Length: 94
Ligand code: SF4
Image (cartoon, rainbow, N blue to C red; front, top):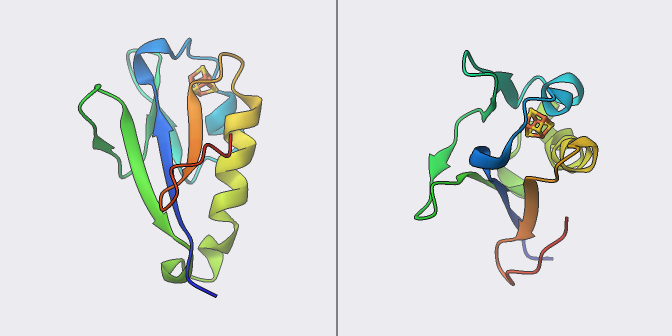
């Protein structure tokens, strides 16, 4: 089976600083001094959104849960500014 690639996109401008993401997935989310979260290791896209690319096969053993943790963060965010896409098909998963 081909390795799946995921894209996590975070609309930082709409974050209300609820810190739910950092609570469920502190490995990937950090609260900053301006009260908003940062997606750790992010790049910034043309819309000013933060994003990271996760390749399933490249995740270390401890990171195998990464996709699930990101899904959890996306689900608990009260303003739904965290999105997960299948990077190959562009399908929005969350
Ligand atoms: S859960 Fe959502 S609103 Fe809260 S800090 Fe994270 S991204 Fe921002």
